[in-house]
Image (cartoon, rainbow, N blue to C red):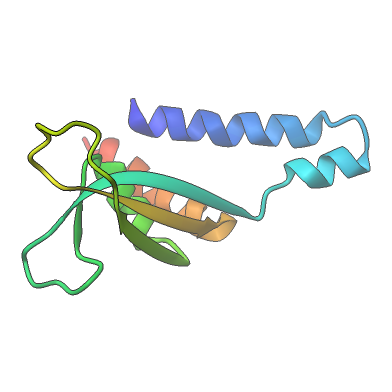
Length: 111
């Protein structure tokens, strides 16, 4: 279902651009970059300062195709929270996003 949801987002954005009322609206809807906030956990595998384990597998695919990725620690929501949550800010160009979508499609449509 993950690949389908990402594909539908792209279709919805394309539809909005195609059916904009005027050129100004069309330009405002034609995004050149995508920003994704991804929940993750800090990894202890020695992979460096940005080494994280993503909560959702598709976020890792997007991160590997990103222009850049920035991770930050998320404050605890509840005192009983044991694990330290992090958030990964994944910034993709349209080209990087298309590449990630192709990788997702290959991973999911095996068979």
